[in-house]
Length: 319
Image 1 (tube, rainbow, N blue to C red):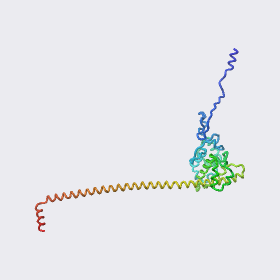
Image 2: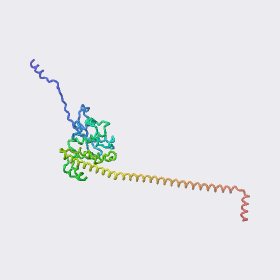
Image 3: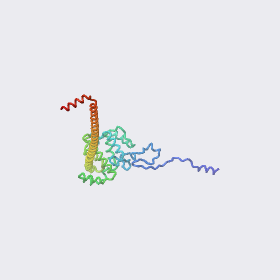
Image 4: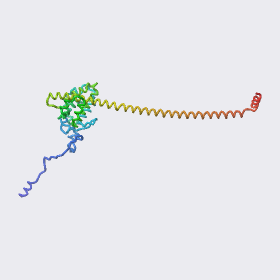
């Protein structure tokens, strides 16, 4: 009995507090890989970020996508840009200069953390979120550049050389921002935002410096950098258009003229062939008429009375 009681006391019961561990990988283009199916309703397949927010985190932990110019940037930026353009932001006066409603911005931030961009957002709130995203980065886009070299830049060529020192991720972000500003400058007659105005509102969001005085002086130089690069981008766009469009239009016009000439030539030859056929038909008809009239004359002579013939012969002899 003692042994049986001891054996029963040693029996292991059913396990409790079970914890299943699953190892998943976050891919910046495809989201979480290997996510268990029971977690899919709570975690979207392609979350905008591996962290809980899309603001104030490094781009290394964010979902990326390629824009129309080949820049690999966080998807949140392309999403905001697309909505900004769709709502006519390019032609809104004071865009990026006028601030949006703070309460609406907080609500949109929460939705963006879920990977959702609500409808009917105020246009200035959209523009403000783009600036806020750059401003809240753990490290400014231009902070990896030597500040002394940036401060020594005096011309557009100097700025172009210094930005070549940027790492690939920061270079893509800067190029995206420059092209964004260039898009709006193309509508400056409507939105009143020149390259200088846009550079002025974007410059404080591109770098982070602890010393306020140094930060102010550096921001002025960053503004010059953004303005010069934006103007350069606009000139390159105009040059590309002037080199491509006229040639295309000329080649299309030449193709059209050649095709029209060929059609006219075919019509001319066709008309000549018709005229030749008509001439041949007319000649054949005239020959038929002449032959027919000759036969009629012969028949008429054969049927004349003999007295008439003798009288005619007699007149000829007298003459």
